[in-house]
Image 1: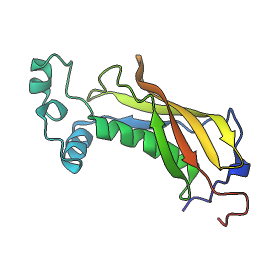
Image 2: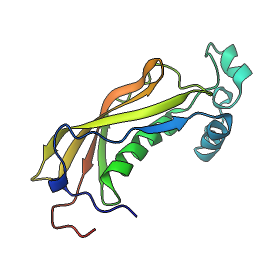
Image 3: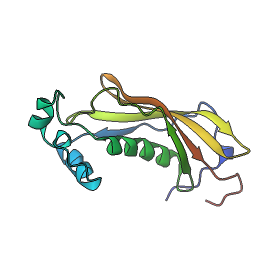
Image 4: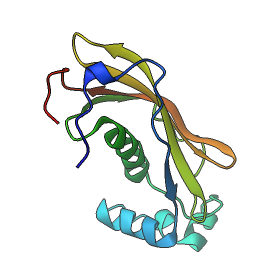
Length: 145
């Protein structure tokens, strides 16, 4: 288990480790089944192309989960996500590509423990989701790890 990250550990400009998500057929089918989004655009290439998409693609819940994973990996188990803003799908996140979530701390409020993180998802062609922000509340400096 990760150590507890406290508000005292965080500075504006700190970068989150990028988290890469290879979008395989298996991963997209499992994600669609897990969040019960059975729309064929998320697991059937022929159907997705018939609707104008270049290929089957990740659904909204999966993409939001990618942002949450990146923040939780950074914040540790005591971090509490409190808000998400600017989550905009700009392009399809299609099978066969890798989407990577990048983030950096843009604000720290030591009094409330609230940290704002700017996030974006990218593939080799540029931004696919965001840019946006996530707020996460971290424990105070005296928290046990």
